[in-house]
Length: 51
Image 1 (cartoon, rainbow, N blue to C red):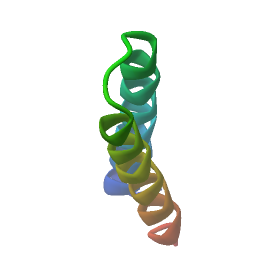
Image 2 (cartoon, helix red, strand yellow):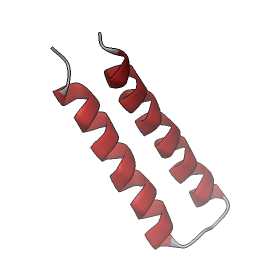
Image 3 (cartoon, one colour):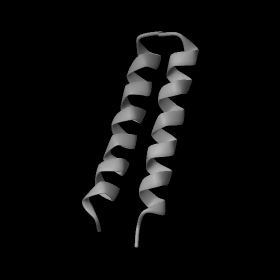
Image 4 (tube, rainbow, N blue to C red):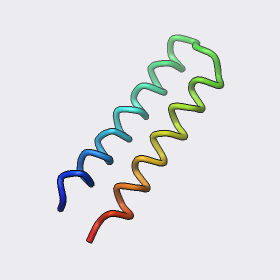
């Protein structure tokens, strides 16, 4: 597996964790949604780059 695929999937996981943390700290909903959207895009990009 190429390293950029692993990095993109890891980035998506970190962003999902950040979104969860923002939810626990009661940050604005638009910021939480932004983190989730970026996380999903990173994970999908990682899977699309798999050989």
